Image 1 (cartoon, helix red, strand yellow):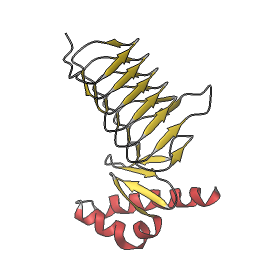
Image 2: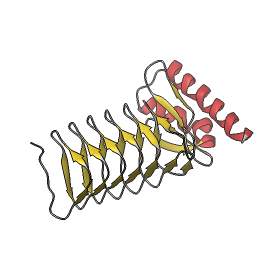
Image 3: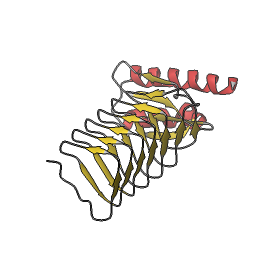
Length: 188
């Protein structure tokens, strides 16, 4: 039997099953919440499936989406027509909205904390498993730390890498990927 913190939650035309935690002010409409997932705080789900160990919390909103595995949507983020899986995270003020009739996939290593997205961000996985992810404007994200391309390439990336215990080879690999992302961003 699911554990609920329903208090002021609203659940309409929805299925809830598993070790799900909901509440206290979540709104769930025409959705399915399964597994060990969590829908907390003021989260809003509409026509969405949340399963696995996924978490939707804060003032996050999910419309016509499928959020599974350990994916997370939190803060004031919003997703629409998105399939999130793996360890994908959409947070902060990020808005991800696929074009009508399309489902946008966000998977392993995706971290979006700002901007409006109508496509998946470009990302690279280093040989040691770190991610280098395109962010909005003139920003890049490395291991959940966001900074400008100029800062990453102008010395801050090297200092960050050393603080994180990266080898010179890994720092160089991250720098290479940041340079590629910067070049791609300039093409837009």
